[in-house]
Image 1 (tube, rainbow, N blue to C red):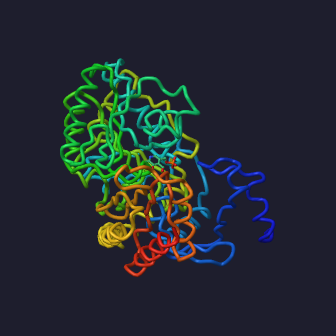
Image 2: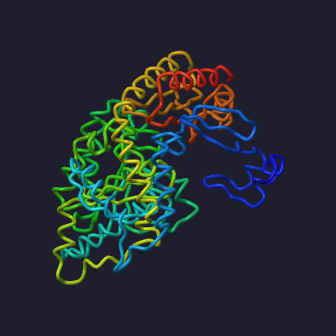
Image 3: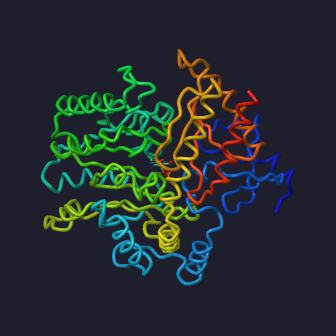
Length: 450
Ligand code: PLP
């Protein structure tokens, strides 16, 4: 391997990083992560910190999950790859479909379509939603509804339903027929409604209005995250998603739950849909399905939707969609081991307990530092602090503020994520109470550095 100085000097030369200006890393060299163990990562200088980011919301079981490593390695030895297109299958994808069916039975989802990640799972849902309506004889249902501040990946379909201009503007024109509703975000919304329950009702009324305006018969699906993640960890009021589900059902619109972050215990429930007691028509999953150790995903399909495809006799249900790595045996083996560990360790319960602890800690920091405008959490290990320069005007601070907090927190022992004015926490679900305290005291050090 190249030496440390070579790596530091060359990071930005032949490599563009996602979500980063290509010139940024010349000015601000990134932290080069070289190793990880448990819930800690180590950088090239040997500095070790608690990973408050959990990779990218995906390393639920931490970095030392031996059963998953063993499963990957054993699968590489037996069948490192074979496609499952037309006429072939493999033992691991079949076993995994059985396990996923059991895991998601309470959500009413029993079929899996495998993908290579979250963006692919979303794309698959959008495409199959249109196909579903065509099979049913309603080819005019082609539009999609979603939420501002929602994040659904950066494929053209996902970017089209995304509700953040950063992922859209430079890539337009996107998919036509995508419409965005107000986010259930009490801290900032055009209604100036701070009460979450009242805000939920206002947005549900907006949804009814939009459907009437577009014409229900033109809309294929509504897609939303049970807790908006990348948009700044925004949990809707408990009445919101059930309300959306009821309106969609009444209007023949499919509901796609984008659970790329929320499935498999992160919210303290086994799925975000279960948190709100709803049964979506499609559920997009990825990330923690393999603990981040292998790129993999699954679109889960509701029984009644699957039946429309499976009972079709016209040929319209032939699926003209899929990826070379749909059903990758190594990914499927990793996912099988992850599901077993996820259940054995009951990570949802720990996520709920550690989430409460971190939430209380963040509220205590808010009482101490005026720079914290809003604290969001209360549902497992998805939390955020929203920074402001003035609590009254809620004006966003200069970018340098969050960067300074992040750097100081890192020196003090925790990696945190900065996204716009938000500091986001999504640590591994195997976090201990002591690890949670490390994150909180590192954040405290970060704010002290301001
Ligand atoms: N959907 C949601 C809710 C996500 O958070 C993400 C990624 O963070 C995606 C989709 C896209 O997943 P991927 O980056 O694996 O394509």
